[in-house]
Image (tube, rainbow, N blue to C red; front, side):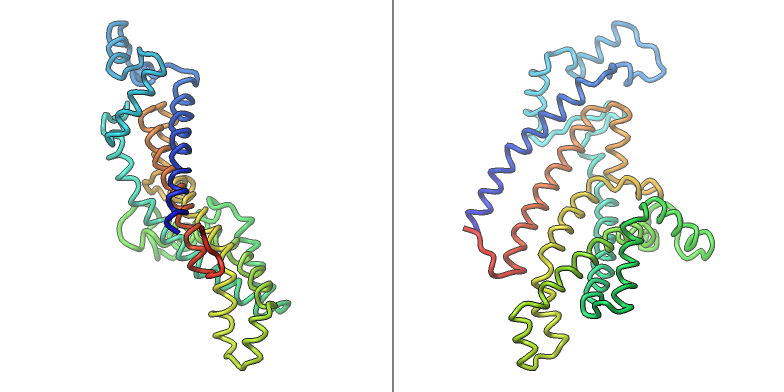
Length: 307
């Protein structure tokens, strides 16, 4: 296991380096003058424009800028935003907490609803329960998140006044966006759990457990469900990384601050340091989550071993 972890960490280093280089080049080679974007509606004299270029190192060759960027990154300095003049890490850190809250709450909703529907659909195969569960899953797959979010706002905020419509605060502000995020994911989880459970329930060890008189609830939970969760864990890993770095639609509908909105704003403003910082943080999150997912396989299924 230790060897596997070290190998994965070694593989992650060139990936992260490649991402920093790609992002650096893309943000600097796209059309437009960052100095003019920095100035906004103001008129900059040639002397002031040259001063801004020197201040941010934009007058130096690209390879020198990239070298300096990597040197600052090695010291934990992501630079300062062109517009806010704040350290990039402070902006990202403030945006991470609301996004983490939304992601974890959405995953809880997705797991509880998706696993429940999937297990019921597999146990009561070809029954009205199976059909109903798959209809719910089909709705979740087909319905855009922004539309579901608007429906939730209309029903539970504007009409019933049960939850706040927008903003952040206590747990009540988190319910509707978490349901919007989690419902879409639960649909995929339900379909994965159903197909995996149907395959596992036909295995010899499950048939043997039933023949020995093991209670059906224990057969489903201990023997079938645990071994059917591997594709679900893979999906959850992808969802976790994706939501942590890009829950832009949900954050926009419910007016929540988050990392996704920070990234979109930075791209619109051509804020190079903030773009590079958000992409780098997103890449690190993906690498870490994928490593955790790979390691979790051995915990879920003892037959899996790493050399």
